[in-house]
Length: 391
Image 1 (tube, rainbow, N blue to C red):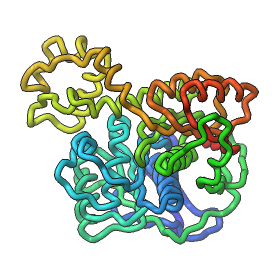
Image 2 (cartoon, rainbow, N blue to C red; image 1 turned 90 degrees about the vertical axis):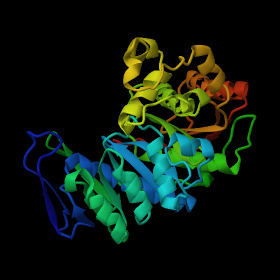
Image 3 (tube, helix red, strand yellow; image 1 turned 60 degrees about the vertical axis):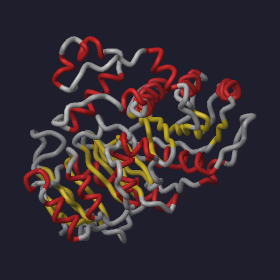
């Protein structure tokens, strides 16, 4: 297949629309099911690059959940503890490595992952397909599918689920182009390899970055490489837990991603795990209700009689004091930034979400202030000397 015609571009009025290879070669994909759209394919190709690089950098199967050309979640196959198994709705299940990566990626920010495009670094097995089948999702890209997985996925969305197989041998050309306002832009591909060698320069007093933290920093940086800038990524135990994408201000990225990381951790609070949900509550409704319960809007949105739609009995609110006490237990979080931190306020916010390890390019005229703020909290920070803007 040398060309794929699409229904329309980013919006229904943008016609005609297609994808093709400028050199006349075959497209490096096979469409097994569905009719992927313009944005679906942007998500597919960006997310495939992300998981491919995560697998190469860590040696572990990787997965990503993409929405509007930025990741909602990304992860590698680090085994889940019992609490996360409950949070991710996989209690009592022995997970395959690629299923583990997918469950982590989807669980990072379940609200943002609603209607996502999924990428897997490895062949999709039957178990992973079964988990995907129960979620609201637009499609998947992977290097292959078992026969059982393909059958399960073809039955999703009344038979219209987008299933794409990528040719793992495909290597894109070194020069890439795109048109904006009828003007063609050209640049070399961002082929920089993100490895632990980028974490060698540590200007802070604390210079200890343990192995798991190094893996988490690598995950955060590779995730940022395919996230709309400005962006920062919080990561812990093999997965992104908060991604702030496309903000004009660095501190707004840090706050947005930090708030998402806080919600991820608050979902593990015993009071949240014990919420008395009715048995017939659908998964998206349960996710949204948990987010409201965690927020400061609980009393206004659910507490005033509406709780009866979701719970068998009215739950006690999670107070600000309780949230603060629980969040104080979050620690050993890694944070990556796609460009330098201009002020120490970013570090102050990161510290509130348990960040102990940071990787950022450095190069700000206020690096001294940023380093000083890290030292204030005992944070180890590496200067990578590379910027990871993505547009």
